[in-house]
Image (cartoon, rainbow, N blue to C red):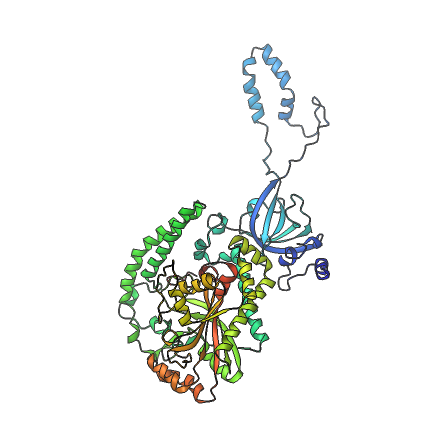
Length: 619
């Protein structure tokens, strides 16, 4: 209570690098800003919603001049005629011209200049948000400072100075800002700005990633994402890990069977005759576009069933129509393109930028091992890339991963570390993101908080791969798309069923067939399985994949031969086994999957700021 009281009595502070107040420091306080009433502040943000209130027109004071008395000052001829209209009417009646008196009056009235119509004074009531918190600040702008049409459209940015006061027009908000000076107004094109329409589904906003963070939903998801990153660094720093950067470009296949993105500069110059006749600035895969069309069609069907947002449905239909029109053009372009660029196997990689074949890395664990073998416990954090043609909601071409390696540790140690990390992260989110969790609970999924708390209060179920397969085989009343068999990779459906339906808590599946795991994983004594594990969370599936790595030179060499890996390319990795090798283990955490778990969203495309997936890299 004392700390709460102290916070409420603290004056508002300026953000050092813009000399304005962050809205979180006003409406995010325990008293919602009530203790700041009377303070002068400068705030900035974007309009989320608005309304206009008309002021009552001013009451004209009664005239003090008698009707028949005309002031001698500034009297015009027209005013004189107006004052003598009854007299003229009498004369015309006597002369027999009474029938035309309406025309004369009409003519006289038309000569009276009418004053210009002034807009009725009004007040613009704006809800402003700057992205620092869920609540918005109510801002009052008088029409004498700016016209409502200028400041009211959704998305308009304003920088304003004013006085914090109690709401004068309605009591929904605890505090409002009465604007005295508008320092900046950034207008929007309402016809083209997507957020000016009714609330759009997240799927519709994926093609407008640059505007998505202005929605309260995506802003909350981003703040939770930020907290997850903070929590991850805090956990490892608290436990003596060192942060190490590993390369994004590598010359090796870090897993032995992954699909990789090749990095080369040769395709920019090594072309066959006819290069100049075709536009090579956009290389598009028509199959990817067709996959996109399939997804758009699915979205349209969902919108038709809901019948809740006709505007979004119309936009989706138009989008699909344009995409269909492009397919024929793209297919023709691909045919032309096929004769332009040389095939990769004909390229001279000795002339390439790195003088050899290189790829975007799938995993940083191999490079991280070299530092673990010198510094003990290390971790890294960065993007990883997989060139898999998949439309899975839990897989993207570019995902951010936290990876770690621990010297002198074994499989059980890595599994314990993974469980402790998840518990630490969940507690961090609960402690540091209460407003955002409340919002996503109301807007996305009501059980989000309970889900996070369940990780803290329950132990993780540990089962071997063989046990998991047997459990799935015994399931009745449920038909899996892929039948559970020993030696077959567990699918997302299998993993989710084990965590959601059978155990109803996080599950760790360990000792998996060596054919399903990378070449560097330590072979178990049965020579059939390896010391690998996956951590499965309810609702989102696998979020951590880890292993104890093979420290024995001969067994590692054998595994490399089995997978057809070129020994020469891995000499540096084998050197670690020749010189001072130790038992070591580690794992990889998909950050975006943790965001799904903490927010209740279902698709990674909605939690990544700029998602890259098969057929999609818009901006």
